[in-house]
Image: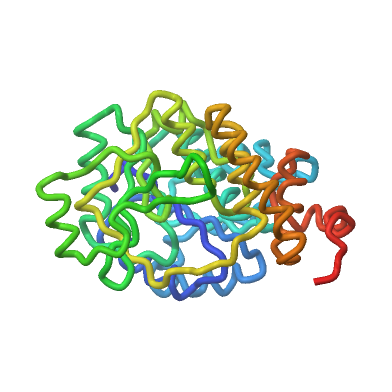
Length: 341
């Protein structure tokens, strides 16, 4: 078994996508896979479906309770017990962790990052979304880059959707809440002409839909913040850059998403972007971002009450430094946003 790379997948009620991904991984990559299942109720069904492509002897199923009642995030003591258990036994092909509470994509990735760091048995961690389609070279072409340039701590795949480029790395607007994906909408032919013979480029951040992290990166940067969902990968990349690591995107490693999710602008997007700006942007850009939020708040009060409720909830959570799942604070937030639509 290849011991250089640990594969991490966070999933939530998408068994069909996950099983398709696992069936490809077990054929093309000989290494250990940790699946963090955020939906405790479906654990038996998920185990059964995984057993169709991996024998039951190849799956270690563990029920976990790693969310502390005080921190509303990871209980690292509980995680440490799981890690000690994994260290004392021969690892099966897949370790399936099913958590009692949904701690979001951020919590699931942070748990896998922590396990990776404490196991101290692997050079790289490959995080991949459960819905991605990969090929036999997706991982190999990521590893080539970090071995060629040891200053790179994170390298992501070029992401595809319906045979067009979704993104090949991204940058962040420093004056607004915008992600600026590179080569978005390019056909493959146009993309190949644009990048030429280059294997990769350094970028500001890459999506964690398919991403390779080095051990040095996780040792220096730590684990994901308690964002629950959204903006967490951008924040982590900025944090890694501040630790002296480089971020890159591979032009030879491809991962294809089944669907492009179009979600409404949420409390999580705004709250987490405000945190990102407060931690990583220069003072002028912070003030610019805050002022734009306040202008949008005033405008939405008169013209879009639904947006007003989202903004005020997000801003209150940010000022209160309350992170994690928004429903934990719903009783308080309802008092803040009572108004007619």
